[in-house]
Image (cartoon, rainbow, N blue to C red; front, side, top):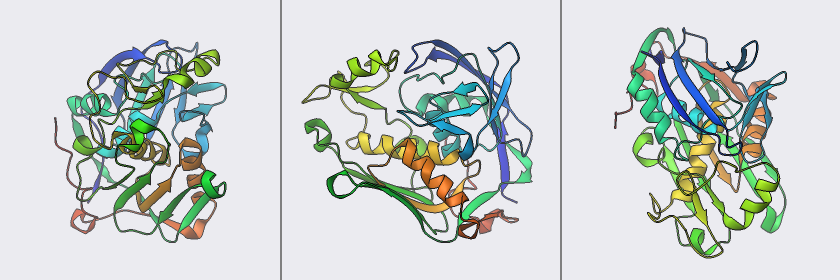
Length: 307
């Protein structure tokens, strides 16, 4: 049986929210089989649980936000990406503020936390959402066009093409394809950082955003170049971060996908719109598990290597 996964022990992190600038403590706890991933706002007078789901996403401006009633958690995508990359099915995330800490701006710190806690196999089958027919969402025309698509594929692969029209970004790889069966998430995707432009910072901060952002947790560019002294971690780091975000956004479905995802200039809003379009078509997907892990697509049965 290809089994569900949780943590062997709890682990903690402290950081600041990228947009809020608030100090936040994060505790990742093991969870029973079939729990799923559940965020708990433990700072509220009565702790509130927010189970992940595509329909729990209530805001996609610059990040993915999930809600239950008035309780929210912002910027969940990097932690969710790490969970997707390591195949974590069940997890309790205790959080003391309304935004997940940005840490170094990538998913690598979350991967380290999860692997440090250890990954435990559980006595229940891992369930996948297998896409049976193409599903697509589109916006705009011509130069403003953007789209995202899911197609049948016996495995999980993602391809993303960016188009920012910025000198520093244009010098890097514009398109990345990542196949779960043959590539290493921790090596190839997890270290790609979020990025932004100095010309946007003042505008965002006037709206109460990017208050915790800086050169230690984001790639920052002026009109011409990258300002970080260490440069880029990958020669296609911008496109790879878009893959990282997409993996986190799509994992908000609550189960891993068996599908090929492709996108052009997509973002958090379009990724969630794609999941909702999939769920609106019951004939476009099925939920499956594998009694013999040898029959599962390559890459899902093996645990990711530690650092």
